Picture 1 (cartoon, rainbow, N blue to C red):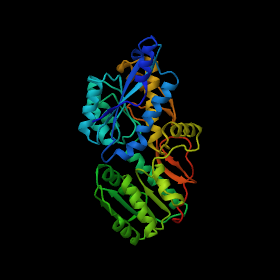
Picture 2 (picture 1 turned 180 degrees about the vertical axis):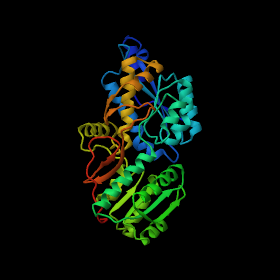
Picture 3 (picture 1 turned 60 degrees about the horizontal axis):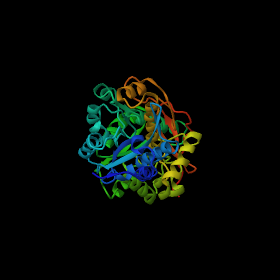
Picture 4 (picture 1 turned 30 degrees about the vertical axis):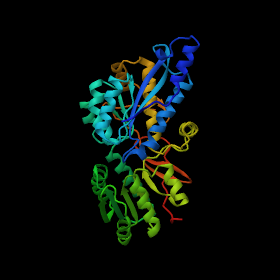
Length: 399
């Protein structure tokens, strides 16, 4: 667990002291952030989470800071690496509050780390607006931890989105009804596969191949060879980033010719486009954004200017949007956590993903479920209520 601050407030405070001005420390609001910098989920957090922390803090400070009870307060971030270890996440949250004096603690990264840390956030009464957690149990979680909010959706809507998209392609005559489906054998992949299998079958698809593979499998060529041998019209993988890249690599090597090719986490990453180039045109995956919308384009431009990297086309903007919800709530009611929670529950917020509000179970009902690479952008093709979806296209040949 390592602590680091990345702004220059300490130096600014020293300069202010030398000049004989007021103590700048009184105008500083400490913000805690804990997420993986090492461990299996470090790569995903480096794309989706940490750059948005930097972007948000620099954006707020550039306009003078947060307005808290009429006073401008600059943000100072204290970062901890939880090493992709839930125990370290919990210890970091405790340290941020009890020792570091953080008044704001941002939510962790990933479904597992958020769910593991929910009790400690609840114990301290901290608003926990999750942005990288997917779960169908928002009602159960909110009844137990009313300070927790779910923004990214759940497995059932994501599966339903995938079924609707493939059904549209089939009904248009772009693909047949033979489906090959694989999944990583952990909680994420198993839950989605268990939801997807009966849903695709109920929609009239014939499952000609299904398989799972252990987390961390390096060689997925046997999986892709067997999938191709089954002669599918569509391929679906409930995969994590390393699998998403490996399965796509093998699909290209094996020249898997399907009209719909869907992989899950990391399909929306800029690195995926950089790795496979024009071959990915038509590839489907989890997530999506209103890529042609001005709000997302402005956000993506600032993201690259401030962090030096492009955002992904799924959770990145959602992460930033949850920071905006917290920002707007604090400026409306101050730093009293109970008042912040009431404000979040009772209001709609203007964010980079559009209007964001939560239902009676602290669940965001409107989110993207399926996106598709089209002309260099990963565009949303299915959602539970977001504007800006584009028409899904048949996947062409690998290039």
